[in-house]
Length: 429
Ligand code: GLU
Image (cartoon, rainbow, N blue to C red; front, side, top):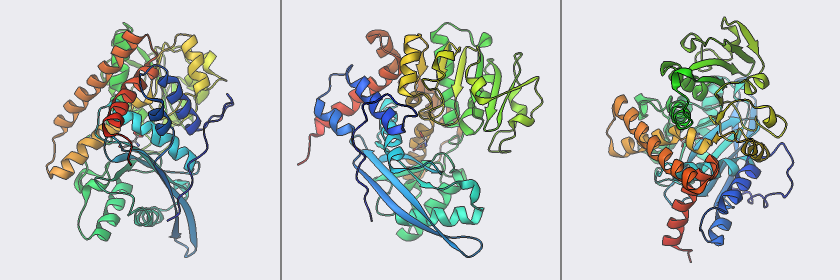
């Protein structure tokens, strides 16, 4: 199996658009200044353990064959098996997977989960695949990654362009090769096939919890809070629905086509999410429509970018009017934008804390798979709530004690845990 060399060190320029790897490395360097951690540990964390590249040949429905590139980046496993999603997207690259795998390492450490970080994917637009092609692609990708993954080695999960069904096919393909059912090889499966209750809504639920805690911290009563959500897929829709249920006024939501705005508050339950009706937000009857760019610049209490990365950049950070940004997507804010928002005293609740509910319920799913024992939906919800509050409180203490941004504080919590583990285990040989 081919191994691509790890990408070279971070560039020194401030140029945008910034790759996920550049953002991740800049964030690591910025946070390292606030932690008492050996330089050698930071140097080790700047590089992934390995990046695997595979070719994934797929027979198309018309009988022709297309070969897709697939990757799995494993960043660090000092605290436990590698963990992170698989994305099917035309923009997937080895470099992007490395950046995203670094975020998974910090995300698992912030949540104090016994996992390291990984990310992978296939360079494909899933909209160009039929359901049968999606299945064949997934089965072959699973076969190519067989030596890299496993319940105590590396545990994939859904990400952009993949879902519970993708994970069921992945688990089945791996299990057929192993000669036994191995539910713990991936998480985010359907509950009927070893998945956990509450996994699908978990990233959105954690974004809602982080938003609730953030507005509480900044003394905004939830009944007075106005919220705009970019992206109405699993993360954005579930966050919007919960915040609406909890009394916040969700004034705008959007999908890839654009958004709808009602300053009196939208009834989010009436808006079809991407999972139910792809790209249907604009068909919802609302007083106003707006572009995705306009949504980000609304004068609201909280803006939640929950679609794709790199949407808040040096070009629009000055125009963000929200009092708080809560990152639902992975990497929605570039490092240049981060600096501008920090200068303008706009707090940014980082992705590695806000959307960490997904990997946290993945951990619950993995525990259920290994113990062959299902948890009730109530238990999943209660344990997620308590894990989120515990992580929130750890990060909040660093914000208060160290006068740090929320992102730096989350990195400090993560890096302290990872650094202590690296020091205790040492460098082998
Ligand atoms: N893809 C999700 C994330 O970015 C979940 C990963 C997982 O559950 O392992 O956090």
